[in-house]
Image (cartoon, rainbow, N blue to C red; front, side, top):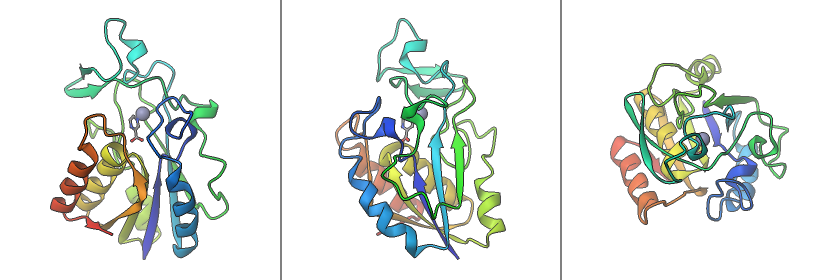
Length: 198
Ligand code: VGL
Ligand code: ZN
């Protein structure tokens, strides 16, 4: 059984949002067309408390795009985004909500970021997604959404490691490209890890 994973199609990652992914809105029609083709559809939400340590505003001497140490990990500093309960954290209202079976929220621990839909970046906590997918008999996941070079990549790589067959739906993802080439490199990294690029 295959599942569609719709990663972080939230207002803050769309044009006009706090952390707008260039052309991020182009994934919405693609995702809406994909939804009816899957029996299991999961959407994720980046879901940060206002004091999340990935926010540059929480580090007075630092700027957006700087890299700091958070716990034992390198952490890129982002604009304040996807704050729990705020409009920016809502799934786009252009997304067809009727056939979304399950929503996973991630990034709630202020001290650890969570790019992957399966685990936080320190791999301390599971979001329960793998368990949910297995309970539904899913052995293959197809990944769409935002952003190619962060949450989409982390999710696809974890899914491979967890033993799922993984397909990246290239027409239905867009990335940040903080450094030019980040998205192409992310796709090559996924391909090398065993993700089928479709
Ligand atoms: C994401 C940066 C920060 C993503 C989330 O959804 O790819 N990127 N938080
Ligand atoms: Zn985030």
